[in-house]
Structures are given as C-alpha cells and as structure tokens.
Amino acid sequence: VQLQASGGGLVQPGGSLRLSCAASGIVFGPKNMGWYRQTPGKQRELVATITSGGSRNFADSVKGRFTISRDNVKNTVYLQMNSLKPEDSAVYYCNVRDTWYRDYWGEGTQVTVSS
Image 1 (cartoon, rainbow, N blue to C red):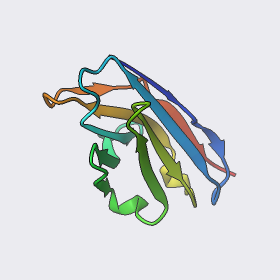
Image 2 (tube, rainbow, N blue to C red):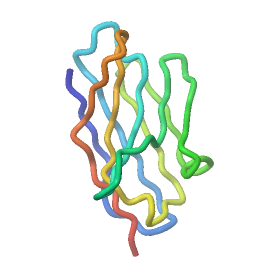
Image 3 (cartoon, one colour):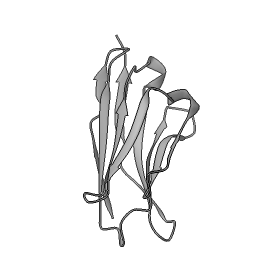
Image 4 (cartoon, rainbow, N blue to C red):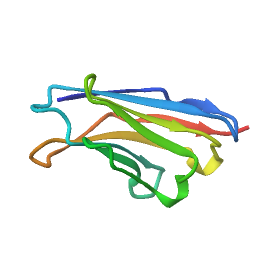
C-alpha cells in the first residue's frame, strides 16, 4: 500500500491550500480516508475523514473552513483548507483504512500558515 500526498506549503493567514493523497495497492479500495495533523510535542489529531459512502467528520476547530472529498475511481482524498490560521500549521498526514480496518499512513506534508 502506498499513499502519495501533495499540496502542503507556506500560506498567509486567511489563505487557502488543497491537499491531495492518492492511495494505491489497497484491495477492494479504501473504506475510510482522511487527514490528521501533528505539531511538535502534541499528539496527532483528527482533522477530517470521509467514508466510502461520503459521510464526513470534522474536528470542531476546522468546521466551516475545511472541506473533504474523495474520488473513488482514483482512490484519492482531497482536503480543501480555507481561511487558514496560524494554529493550522502542522504536519498533515493522510490516513486510509481498508476493508479489514487496517490503517495506513502517508509520510506527511508540512503546512505553515504565517505572514
């Protein structure tokens, strides 16, 4: 199983970024897909997830600003991040859960929100 994430970078407060993560090698395709983030000294936290049926879950801190979507043909999950704040700065990790509820993680992509 391989997860290829892209789209991180440096953005000013109030700006937008879009993260993408393409999964390959998952038998029967991903069940759940999502994004987590982590800052130094803190535990990794959920940002947003989406099921194969399209049900979405968001952290309270990003509701109304972030959206998550997926392409079930390409096995790709997207995270659109708008109205970014400095506290959104973190390493963002793509997560995929397969039919047998095994979790797979991408390498992480840095998002920095700073003026």
